[in-house]
Image (cartoon, rainbow, N blue to C red; front, side, top):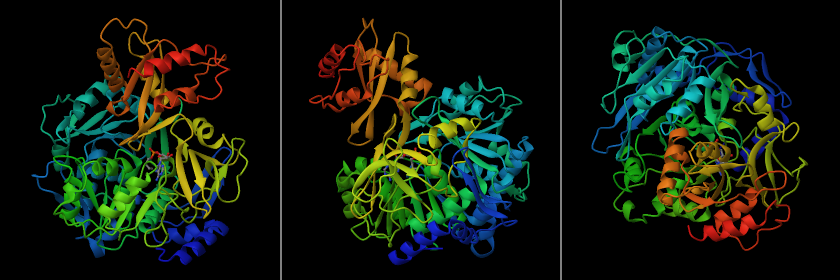
Length: 631
Ligand code: WT7
C-alpha cells in the first residue's frame, strides 16, 4: 500500500476520489479482521452520521501486536528513552509488549473494567502509558488520555464528562529538571468525581503518595495477580476506541470520539505512506501520548505497521540542547517527527549542540502542530537533514485522526512552509464566508473537507449536537476545519492558521474563551479578553487584557496571582504570556468584544486599526494603546 512515485500518487489520488469505497476497501485488506465488512461507507454530513466498514469485527490490538508475533516477535516495538540520560533505556519487543498488554488488560478486568467502560489515563511518558492505552483497547474499554500538564479541575471535568470508571496514573512524572506529582493531582481531581471506582498507580518517581484503601492499588502488585493470557475482545467497526479532549472557540473542551476500524486503517495507511516507513527502521515522534499526535503516530499507526517506535520521556533541552540529537544518534533514528516550536527553540542554540553528533541515520523529517515558518524549515532541512532528508509538513487535527494534507516522503516535491497536497482519499475545498467554493489556484479561503475519510471523528462525547454545530453547520455538507488556507499557483496548500478564537501555543490548541473563564474566576477581575499574538518560539503566545479595578497592590504580584489561578483552573500550558490591565474593553453597541483590535494591539501594530466607528466607546482603544506601551 506504499506509494513510491509522484505519478503513482496522482493516479492513486484520482482513483480514491472516483471510487472512494473501492479505494479504502483495498487499503483495509492490509489489516487483520475477525470478520470483514458488509458495507464500506455510509454517510451524511448533515446529522452527521458516518460509518466505515460496517459489519466488520476486529480488535486494533490484534493488528498492533498479535499479527506481528509469528514473524517479528523479537523486533523492537517500543524503545523508551528516559528523561535522565544517565538512566538506561528500555526496549520492548513485540512479544514482550504483547505479553505486558495482555497482563495489564487482565488487571483492568480484575478491577471491574468491561467493554464500553471509559477509563482515564494520566501518566508520564513511560512504556506503561502505551501498555495502558493498548490494554484498554484489548478489552474494548474506551480510553481518555489526559496530558500530564492539565490541572486537577481539568481532569475532573474530563472524567465527569465521560463518566469514567477507572483512573490509571503514576506517583509522578519527570520533565527536564522538574517533577510533576501526578497522583496528588489525581487525588485532588477525584474529590469531585463520583463515578471513579478504582485508581491504578504505577511507581515511577518514588515520591510518597497517599493510597486510599479500597480505591487505590499499585500497578506492580496487580500485574502479579493475573496471568498473561487475554484474547482480544471482538469489536464492531464503529465501537468507540477512544475519547480525546480538545479545545474549541467556545465552552469547555470537547471529547472527540474515534472508532475502531476507520481510525486503525487511516493511521496505519498514513503512517506507512507519509513517512515512507521501511521494515526495521526506527521512528521517533517527539509528541506526548496525551495529544492526538502521540495516539496516532507513537502508538497505533507505527504499531499496526510493525514499526519500531521511540518513546521519549524528556524534553529537547534537558540536560542540554543536544538531548534530541543524542537520542537520534543513540537509537539510530531513521525518521524524526517533531514540532516547529521544538525546532525553533533548538535553532536558538545554534549548531554548537550538534557538534560531534552523528545524525546520518536520519532519512525523513516530519513537522506537525502549527505552520512551520520558512526559517525553521530551512534550518531543519540544512542542519538536521543535511539537505538529503525530505521534510513532510503534515497538516491535520485531533478531529481528523491522522495526517490529511502532507507531502509523501520521496514522492511529493516539497516547498518550504507548504503542507503541499491532500493524501489519497482526502478532498479539501476552500470556501468564502458564505460557504461558496473558491475554485482555481492562487486563492485563499477557509479550509473544509467535502467527503468523509476513515479516520474522521464520529461525534463529540455525550453531545452529538455540539459536534454538528462545531464542524458541520458553518457550511452545509462540509466538514469545517477552523483553519484558513492558501492554494497557490501549483495547487499546493499552505495552512495559514486558525480563523476562529483558538490559539495555537507550541502546537497545543487553547480556546480563548476557556482562558478568559479561568482569568475571570480570579477574585478582583471584572472581565477579560484573550487573543493570540506572534511568538518567536511558541508560534503564538497568549495575550490577556484584564479589567481589575482595585489594583492597589503591586501589579506584578497580581499578574502572578492570575497566572496561578489559570494554572489551577486549566493547567500551566494555558498561562498567558502577557497580561495588560485595562479599564475597559473595545465593545460594539451589541456588547461584542472587537478582538480584531485587541489582536492588533497585542501584535504591536496599532498604526491602522481599521473601522472602529461601531464601538460603543472609541476612547477605550486609545487608552489600551497607551497602556500597552508600558508593558
Ligand atoms: C490545529 C490542530 C494533529 C496535529 C497536532 C495538533 C494546526 C496542525 C499543522 C501544519 C499548519 C497546523 C491547525 C489545526 N496545525 N498541523 N502542519 N501546518 N497548521 O492537533 O491540537 O488538534 O490542532 O493545529 O491550525 O487546525 P490539534
